[in-house]
Length: 257
Image 1: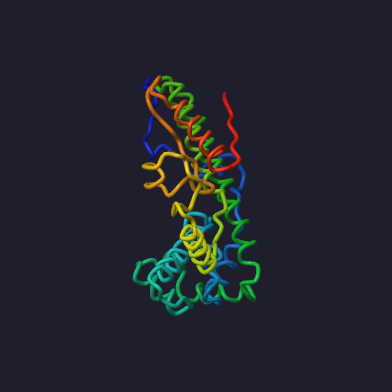
Image 2: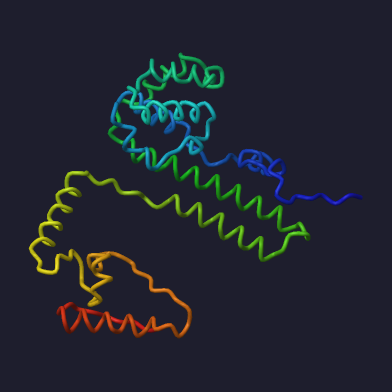
């Protein structure tokens, strides 16, 4: 009897919907909230900004909603107005009108919500449901591949770690900052650097050639000193620490492991 080879063949991988159907469970979903979010995007011209860093088409459980969100994304990134008519035309260009359910379904979405006041909260719930479905998919795939004796267990562990790491990276909220304060902060730093005799904007290392390139070590920077063993890394760092603390009167802390 031939042994099944699950390997990396994507055709053998099951979707969360298929997995849950076999187990008699419904996959995590929030169809009503998906409709509410899409309806809010059609009503409010600036609503997409609130969810653009959080949602992507595959976050929506319903395929029709994926196509509608993709159409809205296309219009936004091409700086086109977003409303029922423009979204309908974009979906026609995508040749997805039949999958969406026609113009009538798109128009119905605006009746699912009164305003975009809670769109970010609703979008976060949709994102959480997507993460649950992805965890189910990854876990099921790993379970199937664990039965394959031809797969090295260390490779499988690496794959599991990488899959969940990539998934967790997507849960990190990206903060949006207005450009005006950032520009003003940069101008203030330039002015402060102009007032200093050394012309540096950061903390001097004491090594003139290095400071000329970096303008000193900047706040919040992570600087990694790397070289082969016995090349003087520790001596270099200690020299910089001494220069910062003694010559430039800057507080310094050293941690050795």
